Image: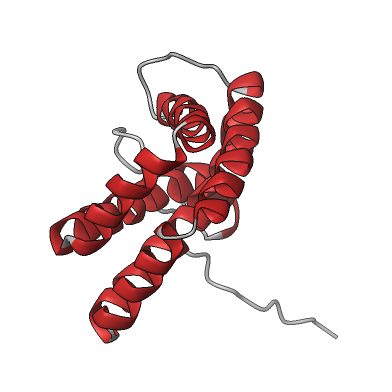
Length: 164
């Protein structure tokens, strides 16, 4: 239950973030890279993002610390990574700034981050809304391997004449 709810929240957000980054890199890469450099250049924003990321990570891990070998482990790993990122932003904002500025200047780093967000967003959105899609999108149950029964021939409609 928690897995589906968290996937429904995180999946679309990650997907839209990734698509926004992709559009920014494609349509106006100079503006996008400038925004990223401005963002990473502000220590107050790095610290604020650290608080928000730490809170989100702790919330995820508290309700969803599932270490099963299926898609749900992605949510748990993202929760722990959010905790790590939040703590790092709060304790070492200068180091985060240096690394972030290097990554913002790297086209390959931006593309890799964009691709990761899109892939994670698609996976979590698909898993989060899988049951709803099956329910409302007209998914039909799988056919059985048994041969179909032959249809009965249609009856011919006959009228009886009334005798007078």
